[in-house]
Image (cartoon, rainbow, N blue to C red; front, side, top):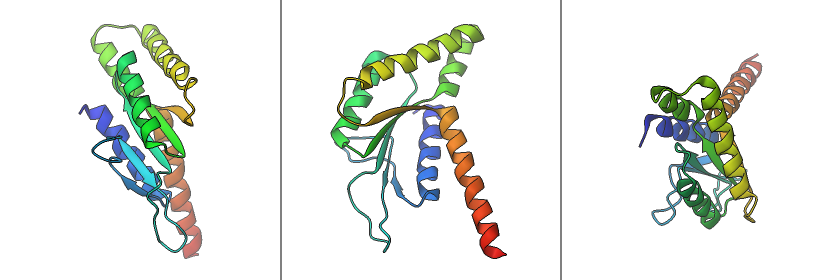
Length: 153
């Protein structure tokens, strides 16, 4: 597993914990997602119906993308997320001598390709970049810290 893949997976799981869900690393051995959030009900009881499942994309390959979409369809969460690890992809492309402009074009093309694939599925799927996931994490942790400070006053 690439470092960027692990970073995105861990950030997704931690975000789920902060938001009050029960995060797990994978749905099942048969359907190995990169992470799943199960909802916690008000009385602390959990359900085995997945709220959100994630697949991390670290390659621009169409075959890998279709495989990730297939796993999310099989798991059938309320929301399936495909997280494009833009930092990792950009780092790899830079090491291959790509210009920043070409890197941005490649990332844009990858996201367009994923959006095209998910437009043909009945499953509710969305595409996030690692940068966007990191921003959501930052917002959640900032809000949690502010709420704790407010409660202590």
